Image 1 (tube, rainbow, N blue to C red):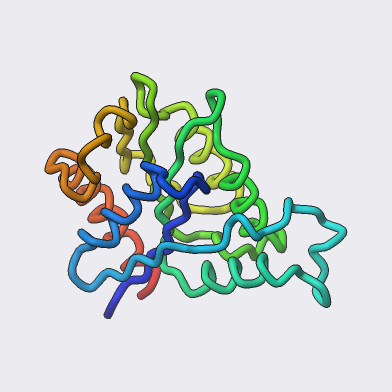
Image 2: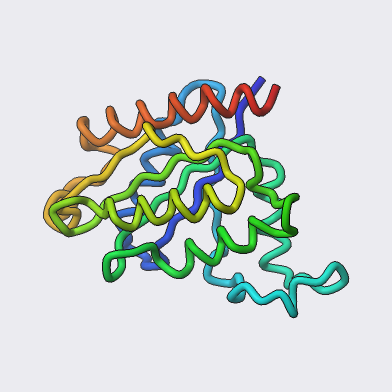
Length: 186
């Protein structure tokens, strides 16, 4: 049985180090694990109950929910913007938490990782992402963490997929997530 993990990246920037970290996860996914790097978060409108109606959910939000519905677990990549979670990632969590009590993220395992320029690697934002996704109904893996500081210098000449220490940490997180996602998929 294969496990499907949906990866959501909280940075829209083309050269984002968090996107590169997600690419590293795709490249180094454990055997039997498919990690889908979701494209299209920039197209999802800000959550608004007035447009979240059965007959008219915006197409971009419906695509996100459909992809999440097929996933066995989630791997969130969060940079830190002004000490907190990026709006695009929070918005995705908001859409996936609805409809209330039956959101596509409900009960599924979620790990949050990331990199940032600061000395703590974005831990504040990642903690906020864990809080939001837990309240949204996801099963947060509190011990599956990876915060990589100094992203601008660390990844100036090296892609995260080629950094042995990063790959080892990411592999550990993916193994923990896969273990929980396997239980969910069964």
